Image 1 (cartoon, helix red, strand yellow):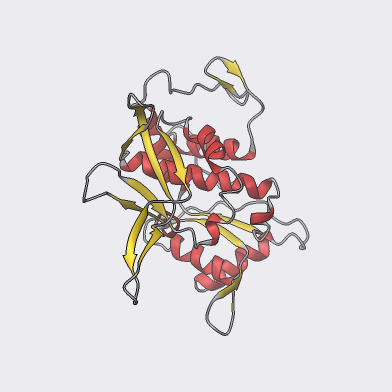
Image 2: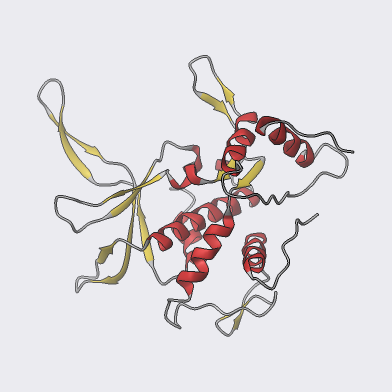
Length: 266
C-alpha cells in the first residue's frame, strides 16, 4: 500500500520525482483531477517554489517552472483610457520572466495562428507603449513610457488605422491562453530566452477550453475551424500534422464532452 502524502509541498515533491528525467521510466506528463477549492492552484505554487532560488536580497535568482494559473492571468491588466474613453489596451508586466525576449521572438505571428482557431479578433503588440510626461524632483519634464501593451481590433478606419476595442472576457482569457501556448512552443523549440524551463504546469486548462468552445460557436463561418480526426484538416485545407500543443488542445476538448469517460492518462 502506498504511504499517504501529507500536504501540498510533499505532493509537489512527489510529482517532481515522478517527472524527473533521471529516474527510471519517468513520466512525460501527469494529469490531475480535483474539486474546486481542493488546492490545485496552491499546488502549482508549491511545485513552482521547489524550483526557485532566492538570493540574499530576496530576489529570485533562478527558476525552472513555467506555469499557467490565476497568477498568470494577473500579469495582464486593462488600461481603459478613462480620460478619452477610446484607446483601451491590455497592458502586461514585462518585468516577469514569463515575457522573456518576446520582442525579439516575434510573438504576434506566433500567437495569431493559435488565436484564429477560436475568434476573428485581431491584435498587435506595442512594445514601446504610450508616452506620458512626468516632472522630476528638479522640476524638469520628462517623457516616459507607460510600458508595453496589446491593442485589439476587428476593423480599421479610412486611414487604415485599427479601431481599438475591448474584447469579451472570454476572448481575453483565450488570448492569454494562446499567449501561454506560444511560449510553450518556444520552449519545445529550444528558444534561448526560455532555456530555464524544465517543467510546465497548467492549472485548469478545461476552463479555458470551455470558454473557447462557447466563444467559437458565436463566430462567423469565416472564423470557424473544422477538424477531422487527427488529419489536421482545417477549413477544407490539409495542414501539417497536429503539434504537441494542438494535440493537447484536442485532448482537453475531448475530455469536456459528456460522452467521453474521464480518465488519467498513464
